[in-house]
Length: 236
Image (cartoon, rainbow, N blue to C red; front, side, top):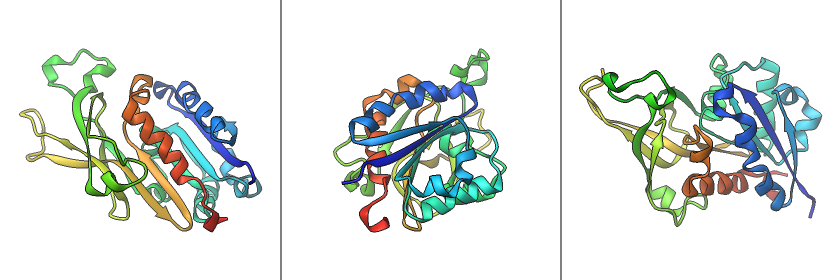
């Protein structure tokens, strides 16, 4: 059996520690038989020859910019069967100006509500809230999340705008508070998959910091998601 090929693309906003975060998962990929290539920009997305040989792309690029040629190359690779996955802002807060990228991923970070205004001190902890990630019925049966229980985190809780072509494996609910402008609780997808052409996409919204990525449930979801998204024989 040919060795599987994984591309790790990292960069963008340094607050999400793209190098350190992706280094957590490279040994997992290598231990499962992947040849891993690491790139520090999205330029490779525009190289059709290089992209055609990939079975999996792991992206950790928060914000930043992408050219139309690069996003077209990424889209073409996924349509042809290459898996695409990532976590937190590295996949759902990437390339805010690209409608084509948003269409590919199916969801976009909108905000992460913070603590009560009088309790804010000006640091990232102002956006750290206790919240629960709840598996859906689909999630309880899906290979990525089967056997896991609902779990609690204290970190950024992503509010996501999304379409209905995603298959939601887990959700999280934003409550309403006296200082909020919304008037009823809002439920956002926290983990989802998306079939796109012959390819599979997996998005995990927790992952702001290394400690969250090392949380047992979060790490399990990301690692299983990499395996599940990888090009299948039928897409070869």
